[in-house]
Image (tube, rainbow, N blue to C red; front, side):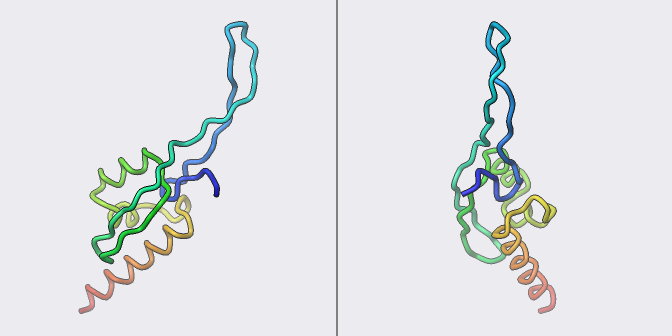
Length: 98
């Protein structure tokens, strides 16, 4: 499983450990990933996603999973998140037509 946020696309970064003697060795900066269950109000379902703590705060700030996905571009989203977004769009279109 990739160390990548399913919503924001945050990924592993690389850099250097720098000692007091200014020796440099390579290191990895891992994203703070959490497995959370988020509720979609439109679909009435919960989805288990592996997202970063930063993305979780953004979801709460925007007012839920539906609002976050509607505003997010498809580039950073995982395949699972894109499918959820398409389902939400379809459900909202049906509700607007009825």
